[in-house]
Length: 164
Image (cartoon, rainbow, N blue to C red; front, side, top):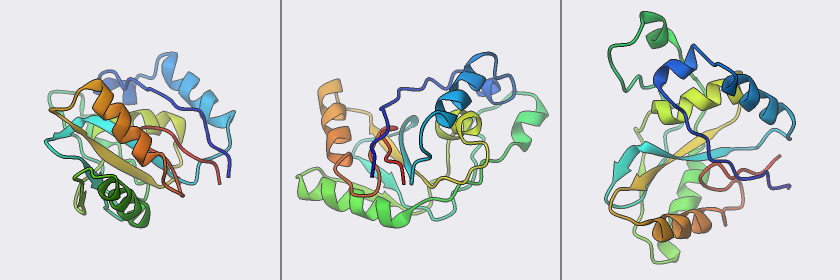
């Protein structure tokens, strides 16, 4: 199993979903230049909680968590599957490392996740697990959280992913 490079992807405004500019094609080209991952794990700044949570939703909905945009934006869907087994593995690894973590079995994809992935993997055929950003944590703690998530056998955290 090969590990893909880590990415930090700014999703910009929700309109990025329909007005890709030069960034959308660049993200798509990056995805095409690498092996397709077996799963993608994203830490989204649009899901902030006090303790780490991992999305365990098998078929996450596309959440249009914004308002006041053109109607065509609200028609977009990103029907990628979740991967509950990976989510449970991540929670178990975090807890084993002494990090309080939980599983959210109802969490939808917020636009911090689905908008960039719409350009990278438009077929929505790669399972995606979202991780909440602990709101009261500093950079070193968030980095450590990502490092623990990266120990998962099936994928890694915060846009680290492994190819099938």
